Image (cartoon, rainbow, N blue to C red; front, top):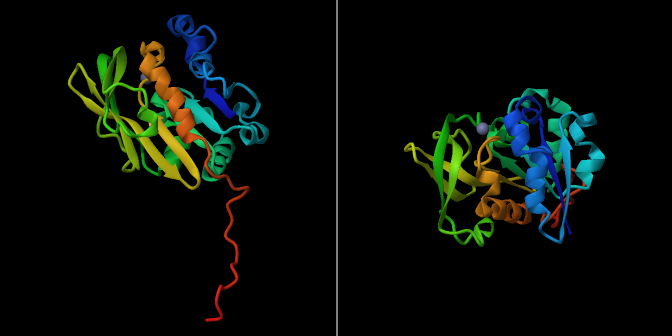
Length: 238
Ligand code: ZN
């Protein structure tokens, strides 16, 4: 059983009739629905307006992989919540950061770099699988298209990814590192660029499969109860 929490700031849905129509139960439920096809996934959602942003110690303790979608409300996530999520990632929880989550406090904290990029609206996107042997690429074609996505532009100010799985090309001429893996402490992090609130990517089968693959890849391999720095008895009398 894989316990997943999909977190969403859930703000665009309340302000934009277009977004509300595309995601009638919130973008978090759109993503969650693509994950609930798996019998061994137990998926819950959490949003910014809940107590502790829906990410209490109890919720995180019961979460193997946390999905994160945020955009206009990054600064509304209290630092104590960011501290808590970071601690869980370093101790082994997986984190999947979608689209504009590149500028979230938690992703920037874990990367340690600005995570800035360029952007413009509305392009056709072609995603190339550049690492076909990677677990997140399983079942994903060599390339697939998203009819309409927001274009993200390099340079993307992230650390050199530990593994680059997907590279995107846009019909307006740009390229972007669209699927990047990082390891922080015991935790695994996957950043995935498609997912603008009005884009068509959420319904693309390959995108939905990437969500599922990313959840399985980011699942904890080893978790520790705390990050500590213990005294170790010498092995030899040197
Ligand atoms: Zn966007």
